[in-house]
Length: 232
Ligand code: URA
Image (cartoon, rainbow, N blue to C red):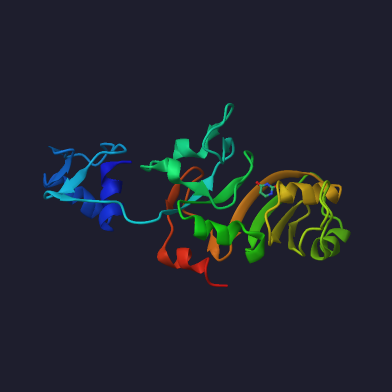
C-alpha cells in the first residue's frame, strides 16, 4: 500500500494532509525518513510519525467497480484476480461479500469483516442485489410473472425466491434478487429461454455503485454504507 494511503487509513486524515505530513519529514518507514507518498509500505514494516507508531484501523470495507476479465478469488491459474487492482497491505485477509463472474462488471464489496459479509451473503438475511441485464433476445411477457413467482433452475430442488424485474428496453432489464445462487441471474434467464449477454451489478442492499468510480477503481465505504448492512 502507498505510504500516503497508509497514513489516511491509519490516522483517518485526507490524502492532502497525509502528503503534508510526509513532506514535513516526520514520517518514517522502518526508522528511515520517507518524503514521498508513493513509496510502498510492505507487510511487516513499521510506519511512525514523530516516533509514534501508526497502526492501521480496524476492519476494512471497500467498494470496487469491477471490470470484465478479472476473477473474484485469491488465485487463478488463467485470469488475473481482482487483487491485481487492489493496493492494500494484508490483502490476503480480504474476501468478497458476494462474488461476480469473470465477465460481470459493477459493484463488488470487499472486506476482512466476516460477520459483515455474512449479512450480505447468507440466504437467511435475504439481502437485495440489483443487476442491469442485457439479453440476447427481447423480453417476453411471461417473464414478469415467472420471475415474481420464482423459477426452478437446473439442478436445484427449490425455485428462486420471488424477484422483481423492471423492463428498461426491449433487451435490457433491471433485476432485483434476494439471494445469491451460483450464476443465478444467467441461470434464471436461461430457464426462461433467453441468454444474458451483459451483466452489471448496481446495488447491494442500500449500497449503490458509486458512479464516479471508473471500471477497476475502488474506494473505502462510508460509515453510513457500512452500517446500512445491519439495518433492514
Ligand atoms: N448472477 C450471475 O449469473 N452472475 C454474476 O456474476 C452475478 C449474479
